[in-house]
Amino acid sequence: MTSSERQEHTISTRLASPSAVSGDPSKANDYNGFAEAYTAANETNLVNAYYERPAMLALAGDVAGRRILDAGCGSGPLFAALRDRGALVSGFDASAEMLQLARQRLGDGADLRVTDLGSPLPYPDDTFDDVVASLVLHYLEDWGPALAELRRTLKPGGRLIVSVDHPFAVNLIHREAGREAECNYFDTTNWTVEWTVGGHTALVSRWNRPLHAMIEAFTGAGFRITAISEPEPDPAAREMFPEVIAAKPRFLCFLFFVLQAD
Image (cartoon, rainbow, N blue to C red; front, side, top):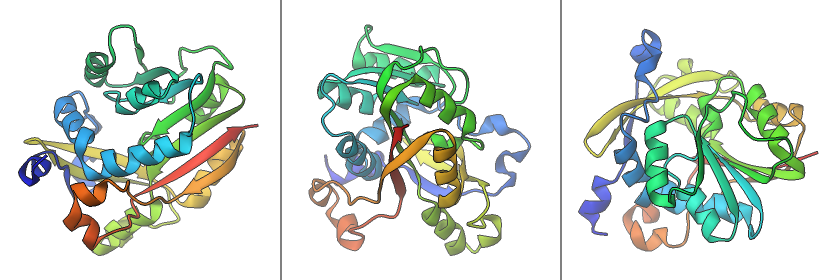
């Protein structure tokens, strides 16, 4: 991929004002509206393809023969990678358009369902060996119902593997913009960015919470933390994005957890 092609598939972001979605929350997180553009960027960009997704796969380890639920699977890149490694994967997402793209990738036989994280999930108790929740929990103000449902679907001793926005990074973004009053690290705070990708502009609104609040939510839902990770980018990133990696070899972008259902 040439540098111009990489630029085309970059998601550029800027911090939006709190009022950007306060009057009409439906303006935010409309993944149906930019599903194709986001999927193209997610496939090849630095942050998703060479940082977050490789980290999730490394934490999952050997998944051959394991039943895995991909919570918030989007267009299915992580689903596909886990399936290629021998896992038996099911997935759900709130966006019907993203799932249509996932079905094109994965085939009509893939177990894909339109479901909101935080609502009752259409799976029996004790179904999955693992649940992967890739960059999805931070869309929820209250993690309790979602974690309870994910815990219910896991077999005893099963794993929940999570990536979320790093709370230090979100706080730093606001401080560098001179807007630290809008994002006290110790509060659970809604924040919104404007994404531009593939000629589309969209508002993406998420919830930032401090590390201790994340840990309390996990342990309160019956999980034991077995790993917390702040990984390096995949080694291939140095070849694909040499200028970026030379300037910034480490990222403080996402925070990763491996949790075990007690």
